[in-house]
Length: 120
Image 1 (spheres, helix red, strand yellow):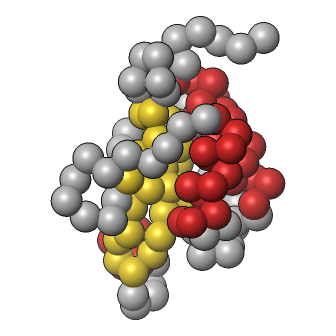
Image 2 (cartoon, rainbow, N blue to C red):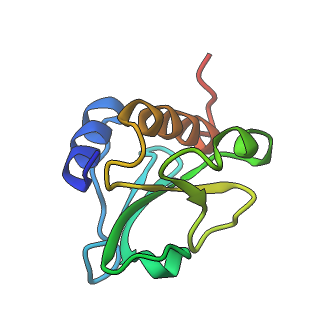
């Protein structure tokens, strides 16, 4: 999934648009009601993620929680949360290394965990 595909998917699935709170290409997705973030997309150097690779990485951080963390960490394209609480957030590489279905699953979890009204 690319950044553009992420924006399209989140817009269609969660009826929310990317917000650009900083003067750069980084953006967030938040709930309409409670305004909590459920995803943060950034472009940062691979090396800041501890990866031995040059160039910029497109990533999205999603909330996961400590109980589920172990099930997802270590999967291809999944890292501890960058610039977020590493016990509660995961970083997903948007470079094709993480499967689209996994990204969608993690977005659902993050959306649900940050929503004040839990969906049944």
